[in-house]
Image (cartoon, rainbow, N blue to C red; front, side):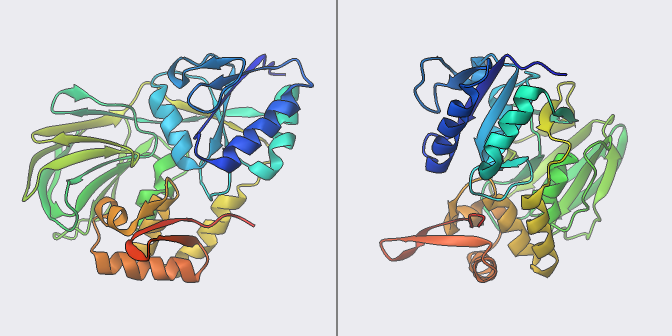
Amino acid sequence: MKVVKKVGFVGRSDNILALETAKLALRAFSSSKTKVVVASEFFRHSSNSPLAKLSADIILAFGGDGTILHVFRERGKDKTPVLGINCGERGFLTAVSYKDVCGAITNIVSGDFHIEERSRIECIADGEQLPLALNEAVIAPEKSAVVMNFEITVGKEKLFSDSSDALLVSTPTGSTGYSFSAEGPRILSGAKVLLISSLHSLQRHNKVVVPDSKTIKITNMKSKFPCEVVLDGQFRRKVSEKVELKKSLFSAFTIVFSLTKKDNAKEVLKELPSLTPSAKLLLSILSETPLTSTQLAEKSVLSRKTVYNALDILIAKKLVKKRSFSGDKRKSHYSIACLK
């Protein structure tokens, strides 16, 4: 039996449902001997600590996939396992719906859970060590709909040269995100591989699965606009000469309940076969954070027209909702529709 003496709470302070769910969880823990410490960025509590320095046996992340990715990135090499509490948005990384938080707490207090290890990507861009990525690393021009030329080497072997919109390197965890929306295969979390995808390749290169023991190098990057590395859709850094990617020695650890049903992931997967590739891509991006159409075009490297068409499909299927501001379509925010 695993004994949990201290639990950390993290989340976005602007997510009302996350705040309400966390305070419900706080009351549920009050009847046990488990101590709760709250990230000072989340909400005020008698026991506060900055997220990066928060000390706990496990961490509860209240929000969507974007919140979990943020937590792992901010905590760097830390091995504290994280449980994602889905607060209103579909997500592949969240194990529990906000509606089931009290049941999850019962399992935590009784030690009825296990810990799953997930590989991460270490990235060095022009000699600079960047934060670890749980899902993927994307190398692309900073402006959308612009072609990038590059060469890619795996280990000591040159894999190929290409001209494409972007190069995507995913972990098995990331294979259900951006990579999957780009027609990539779904890879089991325990597989010791990385997935390489050249998006909209002019040379029509297929996706390549490589051993995660190999170092992937991207060089000779040329484009009309500067190129950048984007990690987990959240961290960006400009790059001009070389990007080195490899499996990190520091894995991420998530909490899984033996009887947990990944309802959110299954519901999204059922809809994916009927969606266009562009709609799948936008769905993956919006699972991290709400965005405007302009921001979606920049992140997805799709044209405005393609973005609008894909959004119309997602809204019609009730997978995405739209909130308008000032009657200006460009300022409308799009987000994953809340689960019923």
